[in-house]
Amino acid sequence: MADDEELIRTGFRLILTSRGIEVVGEAADGVQAVAEAERLRPEVVLMDIRMPDLDGLEAAKRILRLLPHCRVIMLTTFDLDRYVYAALAAGASGFLLKDVTAAHLAAAVRLVNTGDALLAPSITRRLVERYATAQEAGPAHRPATAAAAARTAAVHPDLAPLTPRELEVLTLMGRGLSNTELAETLTLSEATVKTHVARIFAKLALRDRAQAVVLAYETGLVAPGRATAD
Image 1 (tube, one colour):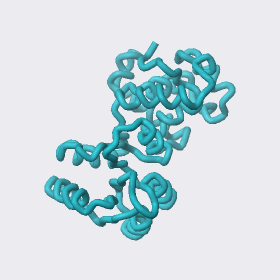
Image 2: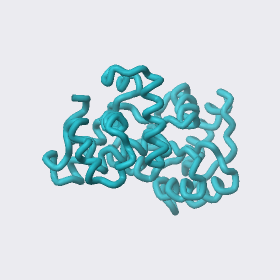
Image 3: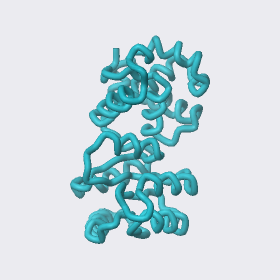
């Protein structure tokens, strides 16, 4: 757990340990966080974004280079889209505000430790809208439908390993759909959807759903302003 406020660290430690989650170490800044993560090799790191000496985003990048299988949840008091994107781009598996409830905090740690991503559809959709609009030339440069996504794959080498169905699943994941919503939209069972998602992760060397979302809009699969499936 890395946060420059001792009170936050103490409170979170008490919450987690009372719910059977072991806190193996603490850090008060980014430099210490990297050193402690390398020494202790935790499964999950709770990382504050704003810290002295080295901010949490850069610390997260360094930790994930050292420990590729570690999961990082970013913590902040600011509900700002730019922090959400920066956290995901750094390789984080989730994003939490510091006023999170005790139950939600413990559930978040357990969730990312199973390999899932802590990324609510509402946050994903706002993120795609804001980031894509700011970074790309405009909607005309992005395919708006899953069918159009197939053409993107033909010209984007990062997506070449995917089948048409996997490409469609990735497109909808990028729009923030959960596995249940994917199953309903594509008229598939959730087990089949989970298989497609696992294959996408394996083929594209993605750690979790958060990385998949980032890739979906960075490769142009998601059009700004389109929050739901076609």
